[in-house]
Image 1 (cartoon, rainbow, N blue to C red):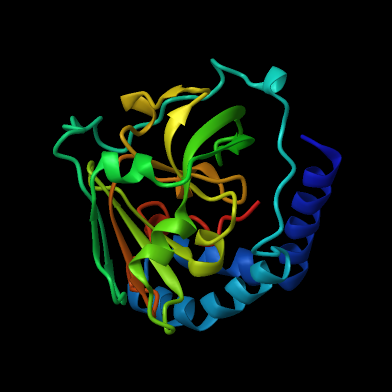
Image 2: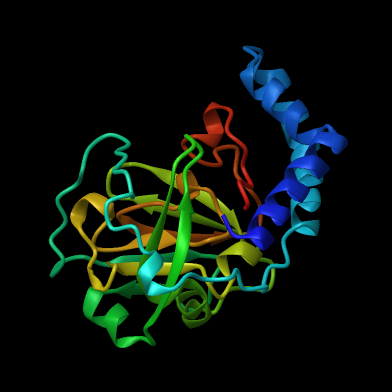
Length: 239
């Protein structure tokens, strides 16, 4: 890990340890009293989020790596339920919710939009990491095209395998948050999320949904926040 990234990560962890909020949230999510979990979790979640946002400048780029640092075999394939079979010709990315211009984008539409690539470290909560080159388009280009209403604060992602995730809008609009359709300069493999997946250096791996088919922009965070978060994982999951 680069010194700057390591220092930011250690600062974030130390800050949350001192605050006590992150550990309390995890403790509550592990208990069996569902009503208590929901009530107290809702009370502390905004505090958790504000603390995290203090440690994340939403538009500050994360330093990238050179092409020689790419680790082609290091990205481990994790599946939630199954690897879905998606017809890329019939595929549509739906963008809905609190927007003035709902979208239904084909892969041809998406690939006509400005292309960008980045070489970043993908970090898994399980303890492994891989340096990967992702190519695609900035998520903020899609959001801008959908014309979100001024009240939008969160973004939900639905996947073809039933997986679901939610992000804060600032992280979704980060310049290095991509909807990726390439990996290491080649078309994205199905097992890594083709035809379209999230990729970003500012979130842990479980936030980076594969096989994304629907994006929903909303004002309020719903009771369901994400597949792993609803089982006790941290919601913000920033790096």
